[in-house]
Length: 381
Image (cartoon, rainbow, N blue to C red; front, side, top):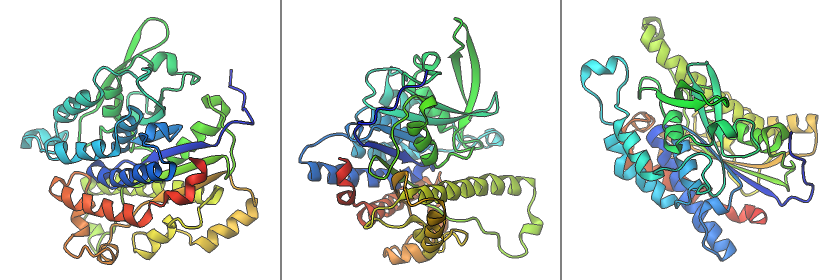
């Protein structure tokens, strides 16, 4: 039975974090400043699990989301990338690369260290989470949540959290799938192979987080409205894939396979952002994600603010959520604007570029300083 919507519920705060491998350093740096600014605004020091009612993440975003829900600080999670990034992205021997580029052993080891014996239903998780995965065995998207009202919670509650996070980050060609034995409700279990949740429409999980929070059948049914619901969405950087003129004719099946997967993820990311801009209200002092992508040259297919405003007027004057997207176009122009002439945008875009970890951190810190303005959202906290 779906829960009743309580009209006098306090405003709800949602946080969504994109996938992107080591580029998770960009949202990690933003989270550090979000945490610091909220502590200053409220006059109390609290972890972000006590600030947000629902935190969702895909792939590397799942690592950050689950860590935050456990009560870890943003700095602790940022340091996870700095300490273990190079180890996790150390290539396997040449013959094994036909299946995947990296062993899952280092990642699994360090996830076990962080999450220990915590299960999805553990009371050690201090807020609601949503972890996006892809069930390759059944061929559909799976959204793992610790919401007791969710119809799959009883089956999933005992699953180790580290396995779910590992499944969400099992990017095909990078890491092998993660097998999870899921109870079927009859005393038996069924083993499924899971891959990265980014191999879906939800590498940017913001829209699904919004739906999870507001659709009663998912178990919450929280009221909508720009004064009732906040959604803060953190990206890992964006750039459209381009092929130099004349080169596409020489692409082979492997080339096109890589291109199609990455570009479909890019397009889904854009679509999620545009839809949320249409239904959401951006704080006046917040940076515009659509302007970020167009002005940086990261994408030429994003409608401008005026176009989106005309769509809004045509639909309704009422907004369903206060929505802020923090991201960056990873282009030569944008990095130059930030003073990073020494950073090669082509190198820093790769999710497994372990040699670019210091540069990813520099970019993340600069984006945070530029775009994190929690003062504009203080009414929600």
